[in-house]
Image 1 (cartoon, rainbow, N blue to C red):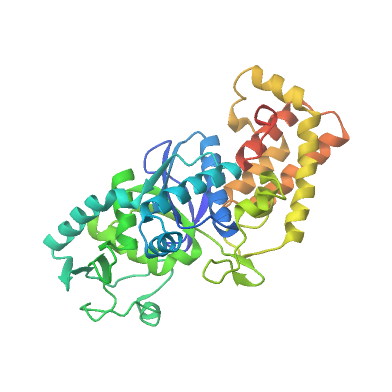
Image 2 (image 1 turned 90 degrees about the horizontal axis):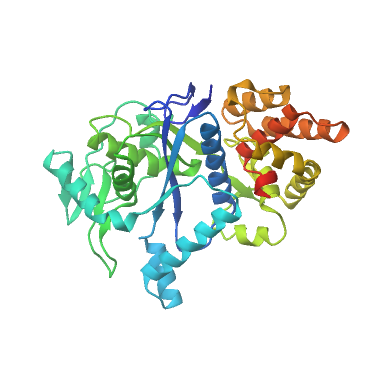
Length: 393
């Protein structure tokens, strides 16, 4: 039974999908004006493991990634490169997908470009205006932001002390921009928050199980998004569970393109294997901050070498198991190592402890001849962590 920390309620809750044995996830993807970095990779690897585990437990999992392909940063990059913005967005979307493949992320099913949902966003905004929940001002459109209750652990009082985007056209400074008029040569259209709302409606009908992203998206983006979706869905949160991944730091500061301290996935892949990178990113709990270091990544390489040696030593046996057909019923949990591994993953994706169970199994298999149960356990663990086993190597 999976228990997951829900950022919306600030509680660890038992996971129950809206539809039995079906899980729908929406992941906040990148703004496609440059290559993704390790901070992005940490977020995407985390949700790949979550999707793999839910699949392992018998769910039919659909993962939708929203891709911001209309943004000021894309326009600026296009001007710098002397290319059309749509071409820049398309090029970096392709690079993003290639990086996901490099990282061994195979669970992301659909990629929704926000630019393709502009018409739907316009219709949704008109609906909110007609209901009296939104208003026009200076060709912009704003949502009337009703206070009430904590969202993501932020109270109304705390929110009033936080940074907001000052806008003289707003009736209340807490109101949320839905639509921006054309200005200074920039194309008008739905706000960032409204873009994501249109993707959620188009891809998932507005209601789904998991919304995922990095922790720095909670405010103002996810809080504003929830308010928009509550207005559209009659005060219901769009997602049952909100899962946020801690920041990846570099030299003590958030890895960010605006700061200029990014380490791109592509550059790391020139020196290290994707399996080692996955083990490194998963060796810290997903909600904790992780300060990136080459030393830590090198240690992960050593651990992966141990796993790889075991996989290579038993490659023929693993292939033979695959040829015999489907694995035994997942619920049997054939060894104590696998039971401990699954118990850790079920406990709010405790991948550091799960990796310790994997390493203990590998150590045992190197010391003595492995049983079929050991081989099955190894295969299951690798499957959930996204490490290629015999058939995939």
